[in-house]
Image (cartoon, rainbow over all chains, first blue to last red; front, side, top):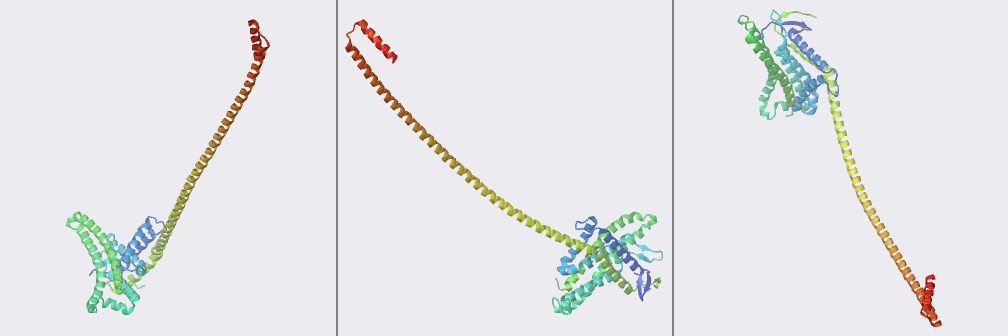
Length: 238
Length: 168
């Protein structure tokens, strides 16, 4: 990630344009899709409502498999938002990447940025840990986190908490970043070979885009599921 | 708003704050736009389905009760009907027996009185005939005693007598 980036400062904090624009774009798309699909919400669902109800049911299914009912209900909105945002973010870069001649990428999949993936992971794990403290009390939470199933496993448990965080973030970032990197490589191949590069590049690009589409969906699902799994573990629900 | 375009490596903190704040904002918007209404409608639908199922089972129970009741009533009325038919048959038989009995009695009575009449008439006839024969014998005897008669006279007498008989 030695690419040049465009940044701006506000209130003493530095923001990256790529992050801000890509995130805002992905979120706008999420809002537009949500508004479009829920124009007429009724007990007898219309076609659009069916789609978003299916998504909601899917997310509720993920939560229901891992969490007890009350927690699943509390995490409904968070997981629903997370899933929609990740889904749109992961697929966005397949359609749209804006790069200027100076080499600055303005818009890409937000989740192809490690910082965004880490931010989302921090947010998910903060929620999971907070739920653990709320459910078990501080003492019970610490005991459950570090001393289960045996006190002797304390060092391993510490390592596990760190790796949980790293894998949650890196799995998302790695998959999406690698997907886009590959697409970019294939795209650059199209202009090589004396102008005939597009002949092998086109089918490969199409195949890889299809594959990335699938990966993007799976990673959105996995991230939401792991959030639920960690929440369940940290609240002593296993 | 201090905007500067600098080519530098990303400083994490600002972006992180931005992402998390934006995400929370997205959550608020989605709750208002999609999650809230959808959850409400899903709950309403679940309520409605529960209510409909309850209604349906109640209605089916009601229907079963009604069917049982009707069945009972039907079998009752069948029994009643067959009872009524039996009673009617019995009373009809009794009535017809009584009628036949009465007719028989009447016929027997009639025959008896007819026989009685016949006997009486016969007796009367016999009495009359006896009396007539006796009278006739007396007449003939007296006539025979009154006269020695020639054959012509006898014949005239017999004719006269026969004529006399014929006039009677």
